[in-house]
Image 1: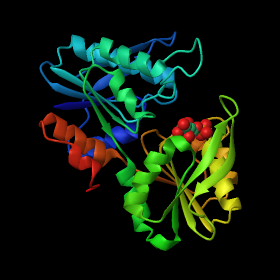
Image 2 (image 1 turned 135 degrees about the vertical axis):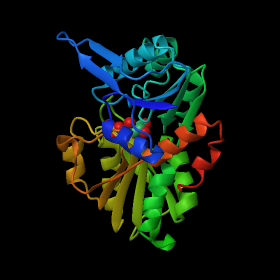
Image 3 (image 1 turned 120 degrees about the vertical axis):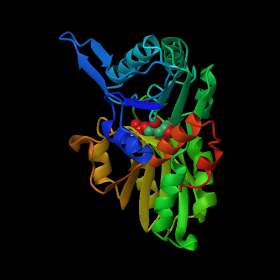
Length: 314
Ligand code: R5P
């Protein structure tokens, strides 16, 4: 087994390598003057079980193209099996045709990865679970929920003071899973999209948030319109404290500004996407998913079951 990383998230790759107590393989990646990507594997990989770590995060197109080129490179270098470890799967939000004459990019990316030569994929909190079915190769779809829940459990918020809030109907199932682990009540914010970039929050249904500590869970925070709108709504409805949590800190456009102005105690995210200084809001807590991904890699390599990774963070 050998693990390699692209340039999208070197800190997470280092965390995975530390967990596995195995150094990252040697790989030189450069850009030609016109921007084209070039790579050279500096280790022998012939007949090896290769795990290639690359989040397809911003710069999204560069990260994706780099991953495709790396797969092609490992394939031609006679790797026995190539598993793409994609902690954040970009282009996932275009996963259905909700209008005429629009693309299905989540499916296109699955086709590109397979065509380039990927044998299997490990990803985390895909925007929609059915994206797994866009692949004709095995996909191990991990869930960072256990890492987030472990952190919130450590805060020891009494169950009777807690309400888990889903920032939209689409996230209700995810919120229900968190409620099963953390306890407390459950409420759902009625979010409507007013355009591709703007949302409006109309109502809260479910248990009362008044005087409670509310935790809002989403899969990603992109422009932060959804989560900040929901947080404000919950606070206006009388919540004493509001925490927000998400697996993927996309944090683009006005996200940092919005998060800094939001009435929240803390923003809890994972390290599937690296945070640059300009994309780091105040009050942020970053939890690492490196042990989870590292353990999945280890188990896949040794053909062990990974189902225990859905139950116990240890
Ligand atoms: C929506 O379906 C997703 O789960 C997220 O709520 C959404 O993508 C977040 O986007 P933004 O932060 O731009 O509102």
